[in-house]
Every structure is written in structure tokens, then in C-alpha cells.
Amino acid sequence: MSQQAKRFGPFWLQPDVRAGHMLTLFAGAFSTIGLLTFVALGTPYVLTVYLGVPQGEQGAVSGYLHTFQEAISLLVFAPLGVMADRIGRRQVYAGGLVLMGIAYALYSFASSIPELYAYRLVYAVGIAAATGMLGTIGADYTLERSRGLAVAGIGVLNALGVISVTIGLGRLPQFFVERGASEAAAGHDAHFVVAGLCFLVALLLAFGLKGGTPVARGQRLPVRELFRSGLAEARNPRIALSYACGFIARSDLVLLGTYSVLWGTTAAASRGMDAAQAMAEGRKVFATASAAALLWLFVIGVVIDRVNRVTGIIICMTIASMGYLGTMFIDDPLVKSAVPLLVLLGMGQISAFAGAQTLITKEAPPESRASVIGMFNICGAAGILTTTAIGGVLFDRIGPHAPFVLVGCLTVLLIGAAVLCRIRAPGPLSDRESRSAAPVH
Image (cartoon, rainbow, N blue to C red):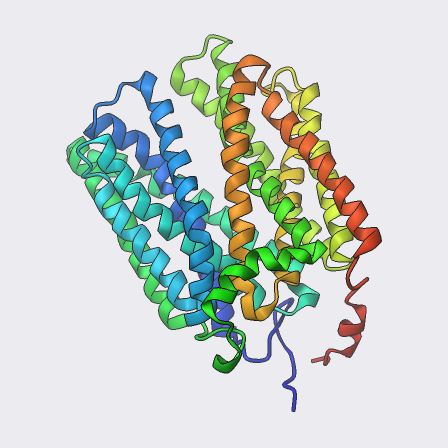
């Protein structure tokens, strides 16, 4: 006998998922992305206080560290997905937070750049495990009819977690210095606090998430088949399309965070502001786009749940292309006339993320879902490596808008592929049948 579906607020849950499981997932969504962003705040501190790297060289070192991190992610996403499909999501997710905590605890004790790379390797494996499982578990727990809304809810919690870490944990070194600690001791203490939070979240996940995998033990695919499934499932045109969307959507986020701040900072510096003022102004550009994204996320989540998933990709990527190509009309991102275009930029970035995440979680088969989402994440990491490498050159040689225009042009090509997929392999036209069949409570 089939079990009845249940609701948790606006979300329809799989029959074996309880409210406690969803609350734990939401706690993980709030904590994970926020905690992983602390490395961006802590790295300049480590480079300055412990390693004595000159300010003029820190940008290059930070960039190389990030590139190394994404390269490691490319290597480990697939085996981590296979592991999750064999032993369960909970162990991989909690293990990822443990590795992040270990990396943070050691990070400020690096005595050389190569040692910093070693700790960043541990951190990279940890965030690959944690972020990969966050999307996978969201798909495991919810029914298709509210999947878009679930992606939106997790995205909002991600954003709130990032804001909380930036405002709260980002001030930890200053907090300890004001209470009499030396700069070196304050940095160690701050990293210990963040490491402790990682360990606490790992414990919460280990005890609060549902164990096992979405299929029974006897139905789990062999390891060799799971390794092949990420590529083999791309025979499904909609999964192939979702991989291409992942390439665009993850690079969108990094481009927005990196080059919007840099654009605002350089514009402020050209007005004669000092470094601190210029950095503050640069963050305003990112904040404007991010605030728009946060408010728009639930709107686009509701839209996605009411249309065919490929149609949703067309809608989302059209908004994204408008936002990125619209940067061509921004001469100065700090003037009031640029605000509407920055708002459109934020709406476009988050639309691409929501559309891509919803499509892959719908199409990935339950028995190999983590492996397929692992391949999706590999495509995202490849997109980050490609667009950041090319985008930095374009920023310097053509103009601040050039990296955004590059992604905008790639997005237009992706829209063409999505239209072709919609014509030839649209999948279910809607989920209205399942909506009408679902029990009403």
C-alpha cells in the first residue's frame, strides 16, 4: 500500500520524511554556505598577519588558492556522489562539515603558502561533500510538485547564512583584539570558533537527518555503475541541459560576488576614495544585487513549480541573460541610475541558480541521484574555473562589464538549446495531475 504524502508548511514531503528531518535540512542550509564563506574573510587575515604577504600580492595568491580549490572539487564531486548513493547522504554531509572544521582549526597556523594549500585541500573536499549533499537531500525529501519552492527556501537560508557570517563571524578577530588579544591570538581564536561551529553542525546533521538512501539496499546500484551514471544519464536531453545550466549558474554566482565588488571598488577609487571607503562602496554594488536576488527567489520558485521544468529553464535563463547583458549600459555602478540594472542582475543570477537546481533534482533518478548531482556540480566547478580565468582578463583589458557580458552571451546560447529541448524532449508538461491526485489535508 502506498503511503500518503505529507506537508510541512508549503512543502510536500516524501512519505518517509518527517518534520524533524526538514528542520535539520533547513538548519544545514543556513549554516553550511555561511560557514564555508568564512574562508574568504579569513584568508586575507592569514596572509597579512601570519605569512606577511604584501597587499599587492594577496589578490594573486587568493585567486590561485580559489582555483586550486575548484580543481580539487572537480576531482572529488563524483566519488563523493557515489559514496552518498552507497552509504547514505547523512554520513557524507556530516563528514564534510567535520573536514571543514579541521581545515579552519589548522588554517591560521600555516607557516608557508604550500602549507596553506594543504589545508585548503582538506577544506575543498569538505565543502564539496557538504554542498553536494545539500542539493541532493533537498531533492530526496520533497515531492516534485513543491521542488521549486524548496530550492527557493534553501536558497534564501543560504543567503541569510552568508549575511550572518559576514556581519557576525567576520568581526571575530576585531572582537578578540578589543578584549586584549594580540592580532595573532585573535586570528587563532576566530578560526577556532568557526571550526567549533562546523563540528556542532556536523553533530546536528548526524543525528537529525534521515539515514540511508532513497532506495532499498537491494536496489542500490554497484559502485562501477554509479561512477558511470553521471555521464550515462546525460543521454536524457533534460539532464544534459541541466549540466549546461550548472556550468552557467555556478559561474554566475562567483562572477557576481567577485566582479561586482571589484567594479564598485575601482569606480570608488577613481573618485579619489581611500581603500577602506572604496571597499565599502564596492560591497554596496554586490549588496544591491544580492538583496534583489533574495526577494526574487521565492517569486521565481513559485513560477518554476507551475510550468514545465524546461519551460522554467527558458524563463530563468532569459531573465539571467537580460541581467548580464544589461551591464553594457552601466557606466558607473555607484550612481542611482544603475540600481535598476543591478536589481535585474541579481534577479537574473538567482533565476539561473533556481532553474538549474530544480531541473537536475527532478531529472536525476533516485537510485543514482547523488552521483548525477555530483556530475552537475563538476560542470559548475568547470564553469567557475573557465569564467573566472577568462573574466579576469576581460575585466582588465576590455572593461568591468565584460565578464558579465561573456556569461550573458553563453546564456543566450543555452536558451537556444533549452528551446530545442522543449520542442523535442519536454518531459512532463506539468505536475497538475499529481497535484490533483495528492491528498488534501
